[in-house]
Amino acid sequence: MAFGSALALAVGTVLAAAVPASAPQQGLSLPEPTGRYQVGETGLHLVDESRGDPWQPGQRELMVSVHYPALRSAGFPAAPYMLPGAAAHFDETTVNGLLGLDLPTGTDWASVRTHASQGAPAMPGRHPVVVYSPGLGEPRTWGTAEAEDLASRGYVVVSIDHTHESPEVQFPDGSVRTMVTPDDPDAFIRKALEVRVADTSFVLDELSALAGGQNPDAEHRRLPTGLAGALDLTRIGMVGHSLGGSAAALAMRADTRISAGADLDGNLTYYDGTLMAPAEQGLMAPFLLLGKDGDTDTGPGWSAFLAHTHDWARQLKLLGSQHASFTDAEALLPQLGQPDSVLRNDIGPLDPATAVRTQRAYVASFFDRFLRHRDNHLLDGPSPRYPDMAFVA
Image (cartoon, rainbow, N blue to C red):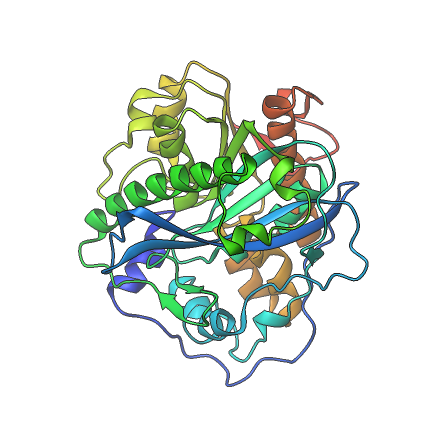
């Protein structure tokens, strides 16, 4: 399944693959954003005092990253890609276990070069908000390139780590909380999606409190200058990869504040093949399905969704892509010197720069159309500018 390979590895406790002892030490870098704005970034530690953690004893705590259009960046440090504790766990356990990528260990993921400035002042004005939900077995940072690009185009992007379902989440006290071991795969998927929907609504509640100046605690007073006033919560979208795409569709049904959504190669069926509610009943808001090339298991759920959705909907396919192509793997893996045969298996044969440029253009076009009412007509049909994006009837 689109989210099943990571789950199968977790169920089988296959948490490390046989790989070379060390990776070439080189500076990895994300692709530069394509918008006109500089990008700022900050992290938020959010505690839901009204809800216990569904996975472990204690209150529900989340870490989120906020990328936003920035006024200036001089004098502000580059935002870290991952914090050290999370980066070490990602390298040792996640990348070859849960994600199933054939990579050498020893990569310094904490030092990946980003294009955001930590704590930079926000660009004046009110900007649409897009929530990002990662795939199963992926940290929120695995979608940083997309978050930076949308922020450079004028969006505030809020990426959520779903604690104890995310492979690793580092908190301000330095602790790293890891993924619980699934027991029954289908029950785990159902519970994970239910929790993600609740997490998303909670994060939107917290953003509303921040925008309204209702949250007095010390951490929120340290928000970058102008960020609270930059949140336009009358225009909210959501995008997710794999299980995060499933969560986007379910969250839209549950929370009407989300008015447009995009699913990047995520199933709309559960592990046992049962249709999720958006596939069974459709959505009453615009939704984009963007999938990988070749054999795919999203077909039954996506076909049912399109048949039952009477608002705007499109299904696109990125030719020459794989499931991981919709994450930072597309940009970072080619920099690690892997053989072409390994890269084709992980991210497909499409040129990485072309893959990144193409999917960025279509995701941005979708949110521009439905959150800003700026239609460049890219989603009307095939474009000679992007010959690798196919429209599925």
